[in-house]
Image: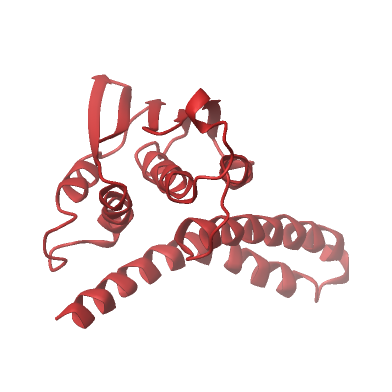
Length: 202
């Protein structure tokens, strides 16, 4: 039963990653095709350079957000997040609390990285995300909100069955598991028509 659960979760994560990576990967392929036209080589190389950089930034982010490695510091998380949103319509402001100044905090830094992915998903048209890094991190979002329901639903179901979990809910579901492992839970507070706060509480 545990194996079935792990397999289903792995499949959902793969679907989510493929969705995020297929765009830039396809752009690289298109750029390579354009190279066959000598008149388009310069433009094609620009496309390839831009999209391979985007792929590299995303893969670097996912490796630390989802990986099992240790040694993740708050500065690492900050830099990876800023590189992840580079060139997008999202602006991330990082506020590091006094209780985050000791540098390394693997699980909390990883939690914040995953919370950022949750935040970006509910700001599909872009927006502002303010990260409060610390022992009880929180994110304040401002912008045109998309459908937020999959996020609190998945936050609440971290201990529930995966049977009804969709690829859209897998990111908040994983994030809720991280929060639970830290001895807390996640809350979502819609403060206005175009703003909300996601907080980790113990």
